[in-house]
Image (cartoon, rainbow, N blue to C red):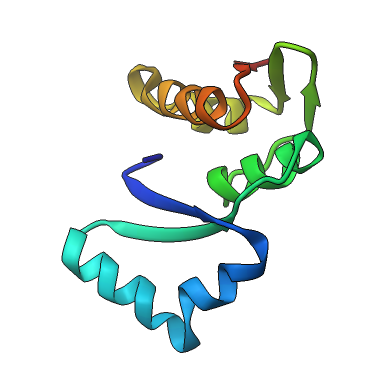
Length: 110
């Protein structure tokens, strides 16, 4: 879950199968769950972190994403940082949970 949407991370080769033509599967699951549904490619390793995070937070743009041994550091301008953090830090906590589950790293927004 992120930003009131449900994300499905599927292997890169199966993204088109998960969506099917004209997004039939996504529309069907969206109508069942009554939530927005987004399908993103599952990261294969740490080199895919930037792509994965940008797909999750899209359409929000950030300047840079730096990966250290224990942290993922996202930097951006004031407006993008505010959008990434969200009201009462709700989006920050959701994105931190995603980073912890997929990469076992803490998330920081600078």
